[in-house]
Amino acid sequence: MEEKKQDITLYQANPLTESRYEFSPTEKNAFYMVIRQVRKNYVEREPPRTEFENLVQITDKNHTERARKALRALRDKAIEFEDKEGNWLYCGFINQARWVAKKQVYEVEVSSDLMPYLVQLASQYTEYSLLVAMSLKGKHSQRFYELCSQYKNRGVFGKTVQQLKEMFMLEDKYPLLPLFKQKVINTAQILL
Image (cartoon, rainbow, N blue to C red; front, side, top):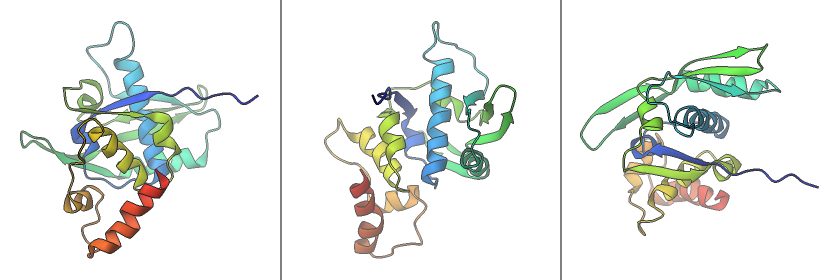
């Protein structure tokens, strides 16, 4: 009999959902696991912790090279966003990742500047399914899923093509709208 996976709802502040970055699907899955662990450690516990450190542990009994590469890539990539008050942030998602063989865990240090966007959610946040997000394999499908989740109760998708190009770091690619639609939007739509 096949064991059914438990679905988990993730939450992140909208500025993080709308931030400017480019991750592969594997890197994005590592991103989701870090978000999940942060929420579990600091928000879902009873009582919730009001002070937090930016170190999380992610279990990986297989210690795969794929996980190591994804964490290495997350260390080297930046996230950039500006909030509604005009505050601008440009930082790496994680500062470091370390494999602790005895415990069979990765210790991942999340950028302290990003922790409030994962822990202290205001009224503007995005809620989405971890199982659905991790099942998506296209480079832009996961981002589109998050954006669609953000706008699901509003009835209207609130991003222009230019905003999407900036968020996905595609300003210099696909200069014609039909090409952008074919290579990015339609591909993500098929995979969603």
